[in-house]
Length: 257
Image 1 (spheres, rainbow, N blue to C red):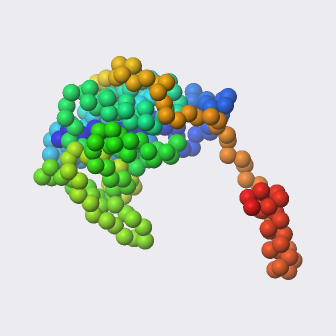
Image 2: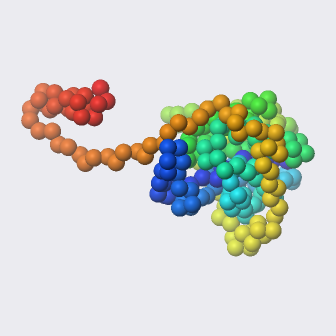
Image 3: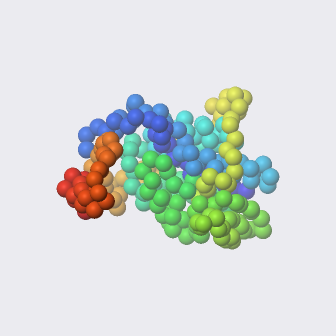
């Protein structure tokens, strides 16, 4: 099987993000990792290759430092990586999807399956995989917790709430979004990490793929830090008085009513 795994280079969720200017942040002070949900996709791809043969290729869009994220994917078992280079911290999801599509097609091999995480933990846009599937004309299923591939089809299960699941079948190739519960991502051993350093990473600029960054459909206007939450405030008195005071606080102080 020829499997491409779209992996995002994201700040560690424990990182202290410092906003710089109106639309950026100090990324030099952040530790970056592979998007945690994408690790389930990498593990699924590697397991399929181990069972059925073929190749798993990790693909990401990001700066030069995103090679480290690709190396993490390769340490888990991906055969090689593709980096689409950009210095944009918040690349439009439509551009991202078109760049991923172009890179996968330019690789010269017919994709049997494209895997991603259900979403990224930084911007949480939850759009890229759908835009990628739309651009490639492929079926898409997100938040899968079980996957079986055979006979030119992918059979998946996804949780739909209240403990219920739905079972879906999609023709290959298709785009699938992995989430927690699909598997347990392996922890790379030292030999795997060392081998990953020697695996090839093909680097391409957006322009090499015919992608013009100025063609973004959305534009980030401003970044704002989440205001620190104030301490709890106890409201005393009779119940009617407490309700009246709560409404006043919500309307006049918190301005949410």
